[in-house]
Amino acid sequence: MSLLGFFQWCEQSGIGEAIRKSAWLFPLIEAIHLLGLGLIGGAVLVVDLRLLGLGLRRQSVAQVARDAQPWLLGSLMLMIATGGLLFLSEAIKCYYHTAFWLKMTSLFLALVFTFTVQRKVTMADQTRLRPLWGKVVALVSVLLWSGVGIGGRWIGFS
Amino acid sequence: MQGRWIGLLPAFVLVLFYLVTAPAKAPAHMAQKSHEVGRQIHLISSESASVQWARLATLRNAAPLTATVEAGGDEAAGGSLLNFFRRMADSSWSVGLHESRYAYDLIESVHVWALCLFFGLAVMFDLRLLGWTMRSVPVSEVARRLLPWTVVGFVVMVISGALLFSAIPLRSYQNIFFRAKMIMLTLAGLNVWIFHSGIYRRVATWDVNSVTPKAARVAGALSLVLWVAIVLSGRMIAYNWFDCDRQPQPAIINFLTSCVPTESER
Image 1 (cartoon, helix red, strand yellow):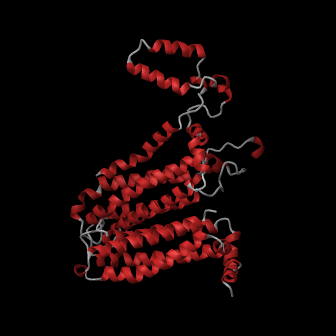
Image 2 (cartoon, chains in turn cyan, brown):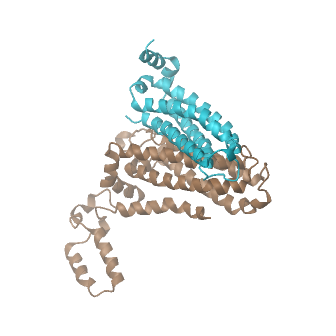
Image 3 (cartoon, helix red, strand yellow):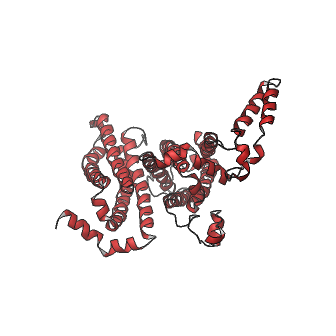
């Protein structure tokens, strides 16, 4: 199956069909998706602000990251579930929309970065790590996740 | 705490808008006949400076003089909020934003980005009050380190939100979700004020407790519910289900949106 074929299959799925037919479902799922965005933004920013030395400075980076972890994972799952439903309802539009591909690229990079590089840095012994690295990691994380959020918003603009 | 004054920001923005979109046409009662204007200009020279300024301001609002002719039938005249937003919608500022290819979308993106900063960190603080995260961190520490960022986020939210509103003022003003959002924003502000002037003053006595006092938990839960509802209703402003031009609507909807359907629409 070609990539476009897969997108067409998604568009024609029963779930996609049901969401398109309803006047309320899409707005409702989209609103929950937006709440998830706010939540994931908070969980990401708490850790990134700490790495930048601008947030909870008296706690260790590792502790802040551990506290934020369940909320990061929870909101990520909420985002993927609601985002998947939204995608099923308008897969063909997404296929031809630059913002969608920008978002998916940012999302892939953000996920890989967060769960490999950033996790290594936050869990590392901070006394043996140059503070500059923490700041660079935080900036990259903010940029990548911003790309995901803003890219997502632009899928809605034609 | 400087955050206490931040609640006045929406009012300040509203006043700013009023000045920017000052009435282009004079309301009927303010329109003057040309010979009266002439007399006023003559009188100005013999008045004190402050009175002169007051008169100049009146004159500027009354201009242009051609308004005298059409004043009777001008529906944008008058001092009601509806007419104020109608005038705003007619301003070149509003039309420009509304019709711009990218400006509106960019401001909307800033609004969504700032949502993460404001809502995300405010929720983190609420969750700490509820004891659902950062239980080993003192509440005052979370407040001191995170709340300044929510203030930054809130300022960006209000400014970008006001810009979005100014692009579509009349429709937004009569939008049921927008109205609900404004009411809940007021309630959320009230909740912040009650929390900071009440239980938070005694934070030293419960700072390190993982289970916070009931008043603090209630404030956190209220804040959480209100901000979630505000985000939801904000997202729904985009939908036109209850717009004035979609009649017939139930009477209660038209009452809540101050829509007055014409005879043929009923």
